[in-house]
Amino acid sequence: MSKFSIVFDRLRTEEKMLQKEAVELGHEASLIDAKITQINTSSQIQDFDFGNIVLERCVSYYRGLYFTACLEFLDIPVINEFNVSTICGNKLLTSMILKKNNIPTPKTYFSFSGDAAQENLGKIGYPVVIKPIIGSWGRNVMPLKDKDTADAIIEQREITDGPLDRIFYLQEMVDRPPRDIRVITIGDKAVTAMYRKSSDSFKTNIALGAEPEICDITNEMEDLCAKASKAVGGGILGVDLMEDKEKGLVVHEVNNTVEFKGLVKVANINIPKEMIEFAVNSIRK
Amino acid sequence: MKCPECDADLSIPVDAAVGEIISCGDCGADYEISKKDGSTIEIKEAETVGEDWGE
Ligand SMILES: Nc1ncnc2c1ncn2[C@@H]1O[C@H](COP(=O)(O)OP(=O)(O)O)[C@@H](O)[C@H]1O
Ligand SMILES: [Mg+2]
Ligand SMILES: [Zn+2]
Image (cartoon, rainbow over all chains, first blue to last red; front, side, top):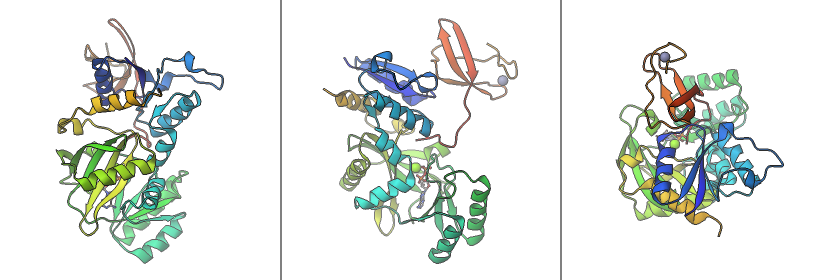
């Protein structure tokens, strides 16, 4: 029997499945609400009930990230590590790390002012995809089909003027079927995959209503996902791929707190069980 | 339990756990179960979706 915990801020189906599976496997898993946990610079590991490893499952990215920093300060191993979350939560850092590791990824442009973004768009042309460097569920991921739309979006960024609004992430539009591929990797191994099909939207996020359909993991996918997982530092991840009609498979992002309630419906493996077994095996001996 | 917003009856599943979100069937307000002790349940207003939410 091992003792570990699941840190959450909103208890979703996933966290409940993880806890249920842990108990069924004979482990002790406590659910810990990050929103009501107090930590200070004198805190000791014994003051808490985290057990030997933590699965960080907050829906709020920043909360999960900084909670992870606190856990690592207490010398508690966390899945995923702070450094992994830092990269995966940030599309700019992810794109660069994928490219550095020779993993095929869409060509992406970075500009650091609205004017520079407009100038670049004048050179590269349309269509392109604009994304916030931090964000999920397809939020504010937008295809830019012409200059008018681009100008409007850039102007909007100047109005909202958040700290990350001055960083422009523009990506080539991948010519692909109306779907993408989500692969869950556990310890660098692709364990299950689905197509996410969208009939009426450019975006294929399950959170936006795309339909999951089981996808066989090919050797190429297995290899790409292992590389992508290693590149960002490993753990439990959701690797997203698109099927570029010219270049073949490209990895466009790696997700940190992977959601799987869509995938469990079609997967032929027990996803929460695999995750729990990995967590238990990761406990420092 | 009554919905603090609209006073409708809230239906809370018996197996609902602390941290879970329940929605009012009438007005749609979201509540988080903040305490559960046998049959006594406390709720608080749930957080609204943040810009940094998601996987
Ligand atoms: N370069 C692109 N070309 C075509 N479609 C894209 C491109 N980038 C993203 N998409 C679509 O938009 C969705 C959301 O983009 P993604 O980068 O995964 O952001 P998020 O983190 O919000 O899910 C993808 O799943 C895919 O369907
Ligand atoms: Mg995505
Ligand atoms: Zn109500």
